[in-house]
Image 1 (tube, rainbow, N blue to C red):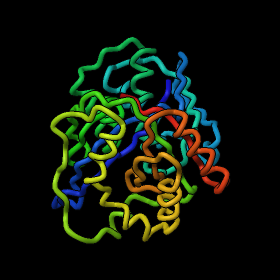
Image 2 (image 1 turned 180 degrees about the vertical axis):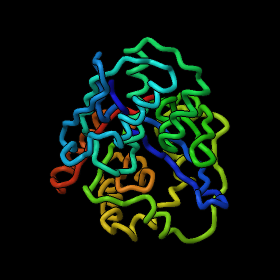
Image 3 (image 1 turned 60 degrees about the vertical axis):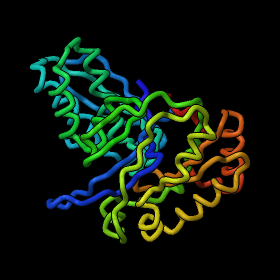
Length: 281
C-alpha cells in the first residue's frame, strides 16, 4: 500500500498551549507518491526496511510502524502477527509526514490482513497516540487540521493539480524550527468553498503562508535556495515550504509542467531529491 506523502499547503501557528504544544491551522493534502507498506501473515510481528532512504533506520520495536502494529493488536485482541516491509522512498525528517503516513498505512493494511473492524473512535485515539499527524494520514483526504493535529475537518474535493516536491537532503528538526520561530500568531484562514482550478487554488494560498518558513531557513539556510529554485521553474503557480521542512513544493496545473519543472531542478541541482506527482483530490 502506498503511504502517500502529506503536504501542508499552508500552515498557520495560531497559539500555544500551557504544556508547550503549538496550535495550528493547516490545509493538508496528499501526493500520489510516498513510502510503501507491504504485509503478510506471520506468527509474530517483524519489520524489514529497504528503499533509497532505508539505510540506518531502526527496525526494532520503537519504530513507528511496529508501534502501530502492536497498538492495533492490543486494541483488537488479535493473536496473529505480520511480516511487514517498509520501502522508504521519502527522505527522513522531511516535513511531508513519512513516518506518520507509514504508521497510518500500516494500520489500514493490518486491518485488512487481520480482518478486524476496530471502533473508529478507538482507532483514531490510537493514531493520535502514535503522533499528531497520524490521524489525518489515516483519514487520507484533503483536510483542514486544527489544534495540535487532532481536529480534522474535510476540506472538500480539490481541483486537478500537480505538485513538485523538492528536498535538499538536509534535516530541519521540528523542535529546532519551532524554537527559532518569532513573531505573533496567525489567524485560521480556511475557505468556505473549495477552488475549482489549480490557479484558483494557488490564488487562495497566496494570501496564506507557512509560519515556519523563516525559522526553517534559520535552521537550514538552503531552504531559501530551494524555494527560489522552485519559483523560477516555468509555469509554477506557487512555491512554499511544507510543514517544518526541509521539503518545499511547487503547484502546477498539469503533469507535463510539473515533470518539466522536476527535470529543470534536477539538471541544476542533481544532489537534491525531487519528485512530481498528482495531488490526491
